Image (cartoon, rainbow, N blue to C red):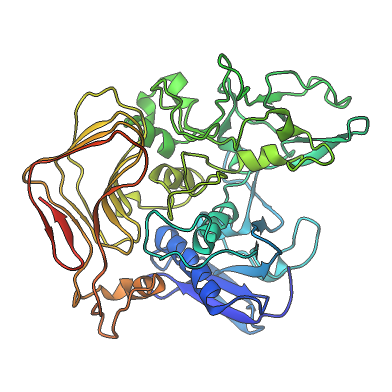
Length: 504
C-alpha cells in the first residue's frame, strides 16, 4: 500500500520519542477515526516502549524525504477497504538468528522487540511491491461512538478496539501459512506451515503437545490428510476435533511467561504435561471445564473441514486455519476472532504471550493479579497490591470460573478506563474484607505526572498545560463484567465522591 500521504500522526512514548509514525493514505478518514486509530497506537506505545529505547539507525531518508540519523519509529501505512472489515499486513519477513534456528520476524518486531534498525524505505510486501513502511493496515467502516474509557459495554468491534487487535497481528501474533496443493476434483485448497516458521509458530503445540514444524499440515478433524500426492508422510500438526467429546481441540501457545502466569509457579517446577499445554488456542473459553488450565483457546466455531479446505461458494477461505492459529481466542478477549469481545485491552495472559515473543513488558503496570484456572471453592487470599496510572489497568481480574478470592491487598487503579477489581466467568465468590481499600478514578485538580500527560490526552482526558486534570476521571472500583451466579461479599463501607469510587 503506497500512495500520497494525506495525514501523518506521530505517537510518542513517555520520553517524547516517536514510536509509531502513522501515515494515512486516504482522505476518507474523519477526524474521529484518526483519533480512534491514534488511541489504539498509544495503548501499544505505553505497553511496549514507555521510555526512550527505539533503535538508532545510520543516516538515511525518512518518510518525508529528509536525511536523518537517529531513533527509527515503526512506520505504518493506513488505508481503507470497503465494508465492516479490517486487516493488517506485515512486510517481507526478515530472517532472525536470535533463536536456535531462523524464524520469520516482522520489521515491527525487529524494531520493538529485538531493538534492530530497519529501514522503512526498503520494505516490501510479500509480492515484492515497495511500500516504504514497516507495516500496512486496511480499515473499513467501524463505529467511533464508544466511549474510549469504557472497559465493557462498547459498540462491538468499534474502531479503536479493532485497530488495537490489528496491531497485535502487526506485532507478531501471526502464524505462517502457504498454499501447497489444489484439489481440482473437489475445487479445494490445502495449506501448510511455511518452510520457515514465524516466531509465533515456534511457540505452538498441537493436540499431542508436539511443536509446529516447517511444512506441517494442520489437521482439525482427527483424520489423516492423504489427499495431497506431494505429502509423502509429511508431519501433521494435529489440532484435534472440536466436535469430538473424546479428542477435543487442544492446540496451545506455550512460553515461559505464559506458563508461569497460568500455573503460578516457575517454569522449572512445571510438569512435562503442563509445559506443553500453555495458553490454549482451541476454543471459546479459556478453560474447558476440567480445571486443567490448558491456556488460551483459538478456534472460531465448530466446523472442522471448512478450516482446511476452501470449497467454492463457502464463506471460509482455505487459509482460515491459519487465521485461527493467528488469534488468541480466550473467552471474549480482544485478540480473539469471536463475534462478541468484551475488552478494550489485552488480557494479562495475552501480554505474557507478547513477552514470550521477545517484547519487554512490565505487566505489573497493567495488572495486579489475574486468575485463569478454574477454582474448586477453596479460598485464596490475594495479597497482591496494585497502584498504577496505566490505561485500562486492573488490580485483580477473576477471569476463570468457581473462584473464591479474598482480596487482602489494597488497590489503586487510577489510569484512564481502569478498574479496581474485574469479575468475569461464572460462579465466582469475591470477598473484600474490612481494611482492604479498592480505589479507582482521579479527582479534578489532580496533577498528572509530566511523562503521562500526552498519554492521558490521547485517551481523551482533558489535562491543562500545567498537568492538572480539568475534570476528574470516572472510576470503577468493582466491575462485574460478564457471566452469572457471582457472589460479592463486602465487609466494609464504600464512598463515592464525584469521580472517585472506593471500597474499604
